[in-house]
Length: 137
Image 1 (cartoon, helix red, strand yellow):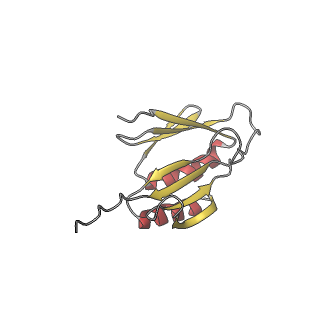
Image 2 (cartoon, rainbow, N blue to C red):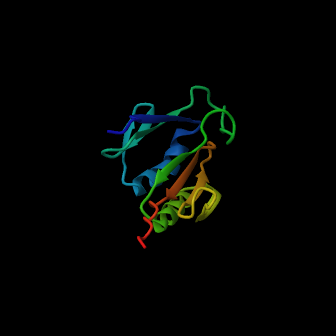
Image 3 (cartoon, rainbow, N blue to C red):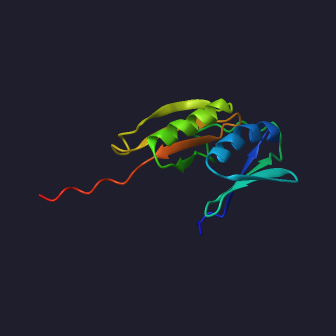
């Protein structure tokens, strides 16, 4: 059971945000659930992600680096999956913050991309395989 049960995010334009998030969560294997006033995505064993309309419309977009949301990272199984999800997000209208690449400042295996939606919500697709054990001499 995940420690985080759900994550709710407020957006300025719910239909537009659904159009951006739905292809990403569908590509990750999540199922979409529509409800009065919001939408969520969930898959067994993972944290539910919920979009809700902002209580104060027009107060966005969020600015990266300010107090609040920084980014949400999705761990995936390969560099190819990082690249596939990055392309899905860009195709759905997300803006590229950083193209897929290695991040040696984290470690020599960390491969990731960053995208941002119209609300300033930033997500990361990342692959960080475990370090191979050193061979015995």
